[in-house]
Amino acid sequence: MRATALALLICSGIGHAQSYAPAEGLPGSTAISRQSPSFTAWASGIEVTRGYVNASDPDQSASGSNLVTAGQPEHAIGFPDGNTVSLGDGGFAVCTFESPIADGSGYDFAVFENGSTAYLELAFVEASSDGVHFFRFPNHSETQTATQLGTFGTPVAGFLNNLAGKYGALYGTPFDLSELPDDDLLDKHSVTHIKVIDVIGSVDPQFGQADSFGNLVNDSFPTPFNSGGFDLQAVGVIHSQLGLNEPDLDSARLYPNPTTGMSTVEIHGAFELEVADASGKVIARKKSENFDQIDASAFADGMYLVRIRQENAEKIIKLIKM
View 1 (spheres, rainbow, N blue to C red):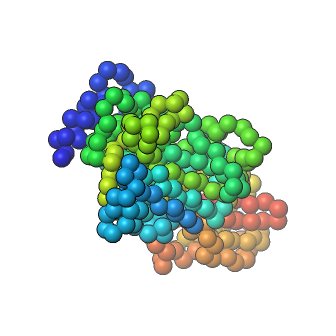
View 2: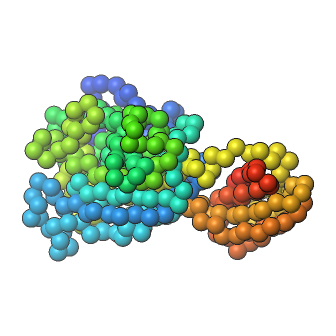
View 3: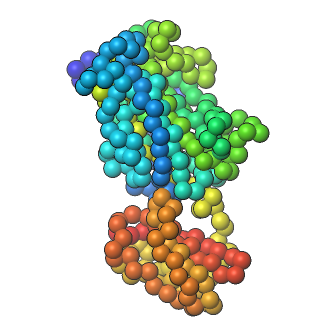
């Protein structure tokens, strides 16, 4: 099976150059590691609509159902730990967040699947600021469409743009909200919902789906398993309303950082201290004067947001617990 997949992968790359960022680990890749400190939060809510085991044969079943059943929706909430929820052919997930995603400098969020360079599964991505009107990121697949990749075939990252799943399980595919067209129904500085939609990767136009240029997206198809289709692992937030506040309290200090236990917050005068986890949930809040301490010894390893308020000013510092 692996030899077949490799042969198909090579065939898909013959005849034209790759226009887009290559696989993780290669120069020019835009893959973002799940451990990157760029992530300030993760999806905190999700609704999933499962797709067929095989869109070309809606009666085909796996594990007693013609819809995929693998994984639970909550597996795609929070940090990407390897657990996923399978969407099936054309299935989709709508993720929500503690604080809206905002259009900052560069990429604003990333979507994680569970694939590898030997087996990628793709999805369209859409954004909404009201949960009703969704706007799809312009996307492109340069993978040839003369031959179906097949069940164990795979597209190649360098032929793909703005399609979730182009990177392996430990790396997110990033998206920049500024690439969405301007529309009165979309507030790019307050995106509340991200929709991830499995690509039915058939080159048969009766079932397949096209990219923004009208090209059918050639993906592994069919995948007639209870875990078929895109396997959503997580959506990580880089820029959010919670994290876009400019630091106005230049004298505020947090040390040591990273920490294995106790860290000190130091600033002249009275202040309010708030600590939030990676999802944006506040886990500690208190008032102090001149200095205070954060006992992170009981915190799970990872990143936390320390918000320091003083009068009408505030500063947010990322605290890393190791």
